[in-house]
Image (cartoon, rainbow over all chains, first blue to last red):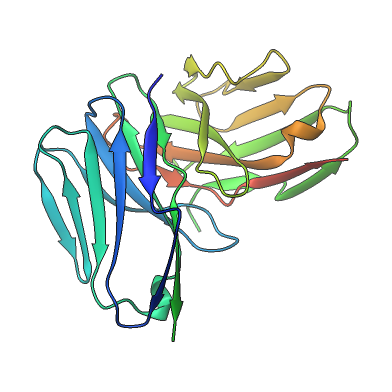
Length: 110
Length: 114
């Protein structure tokens, strides 16, 4: 079945440093979404990428979808303590369900 | 608050008991999803509905699990003869219509099986 892998599993950064998490799918995706989950909270939608090679920005966050639509990345510039949490990617095929990665947990030291 | 709601938020039960969870999606959202999440893992797809029709079930969903959405609005997830391995957070999400629509998650029901 479809597998979605994320690396790294954990990332500890000093406030102000950059952060990147990578997502790789075993199959070609129709689209990919990114979610953020704070400790004790539920996943909150951040963005969806649909087109091959697509790049989207949200303030300090940059999201990319690979040309082959099998990988994606999330980059945060100049991290802040409010960025802490676990970032999940979720890939959709055309089969009607999302397959989530196991997330990258970001901690930010002030 | 017009977001996705789930009840109860926490459930502690003894092994072998049956439990039922409820999810109320965002009004007029046609798609409703159930996921299970354990510590350190991403949400794991269980099943989803388009209106009242259950369109897909994960192979992870054993015969002890059943989900319904009788009127195309709220949904229930029942687990019969609970096992300790069923302990997890059960998340519900809804989306407006198509696969590419944003999924909005509820706060989840945390199940602990003793």
